[in-house]
Structures are given as structure tokens and as C-alpha cells.
Amino acid sequence: EAAVTQSPRSKVAVTGGKVTLSCHQTNNHDYMYWYRQDTGHGLRLIHYSYVADSTEKGDIPDGYKASRPSQENFSLILELASLSQTAVYFCASSVSGGQDTQYFGPGTRLLVL
Amino acid sequence: LAKTTQPPSMEAYEGQEVNVSCSHTNIATSEYIYWYRQVPHQGPQFIIQGYKDYVVNEVASLFISADRKLSTLSLPWVSLRDAAVYYCIVTDIGTNAYKVIFGKGTHLHVLP
Image (cartoon, rainbow over all chains, first blue to last red; front, side, top):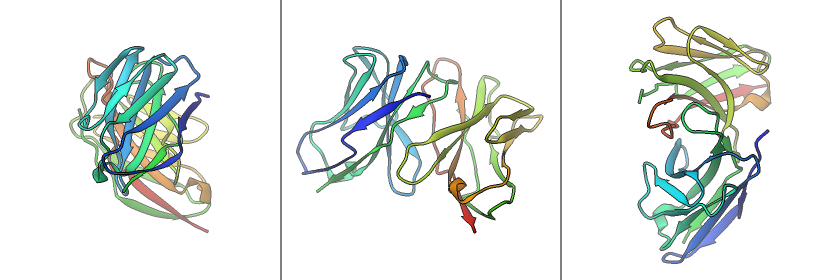
């Protein structure tokens, strides 16, 4: 089964600070995704990538950057963290886009104060 | 992309069969139906997928109406471990292939 790991698992950040969330997958999947989940809501797509050194905007990219330095690694960067970015962030990967099953990591709980 | 509508919550006793419905009235011919579930403090986990008719695997079964506007996820003999949020998703295999939209899902409560 696909293995997707995330680090850190939880983080407290200060408003205006820089936050980097990391994701690592070990299954040679081409596609990787970053979602955020707010309490009581579904997941919303922030950024995704289908090849190393390339990233694409999802539905809510504002305030976030992404980096895909290798097939295995995908980072989400909050250059200036804000209170509204407090959420749980999930990374996922899939063999290809669309109809392929997405495999999710355990999530990173981010609290911005 | 087709929008999905699910009941916000359901309740069942251990050992019962649970059927979770999902309406996707605008589903396109290129879209597939997926079900995921999410237990607290974990990411969503794939359960089953289908395009039409009836699909079954070791975890669940999925019935899709003939017009593909309604699907029903069936969980036999639920246990406390099945308490989770269940997401019905339709996704396109076309150019917007990344567009997997998770709504609010159905929160299944399992009673002992």
C-alpha cells in the first residue's frame, strides 16, 4: 500500500512567520497534492504537482506556495502565516490524476497564533 | 464537475448493514464515482470506486443507478471502527484530472 508521510505532525506558528510543511511518498507516484481541512468541513485543494520541479495551483492557492524538488518530496510553504491558515493539512499522492486513487498522509495540524 | 449531495449524518448499531446514499444529478459521462472515509486524526482512505452498475470488494459494495445520478455505498456488519466521515466524490478522467473535490461527507455514528 502507498506510504505517504508528513512532517511535522503538528506545529504552532506565529502570525507573519514562515512555515514549511513537508510530504514524502515512497511509491513512485507522479501526482502529489496538498489539501487543507477546516474543522467540520471537507478537504480543499491548495496545490498539486504531476512532475518534479513543477507545481500547479489548486482551488485555494492564495497565501501558499509549493515546491516539488523530487518525485518523492512535496512541500507546502506559508511565507507569511496568518490566523486564517490554522487548519489540518493533508498531503496525498496518486499514480496519475483524475480517476486514480489518492493515498493520504496522516495530516499536519497547524495552529497560527 | 458534478456536485454531490449526501446526508450529513447517519446512525447505526454494531452489526447492522449501513447504506449511505449520494446524489450526483449532473454527473458527466467521463466522471467516475469514488468513496473515501476518514476517521478522526487521519487522512481519507479509499474504499471503492465505480462507473456503473454494481461493484464489490472486501470492504464494501457500491450500487450505481442506471442513470448514474445516485450511488449507494453499502457497509455490511458495521463495527465501532467504521465510525467515520464518508465522502462521495465524482472525478473526471479528462483534462481537469486533478479535480477531486471533497465535500462535507456523511458522518456515520456507530452505537454499541
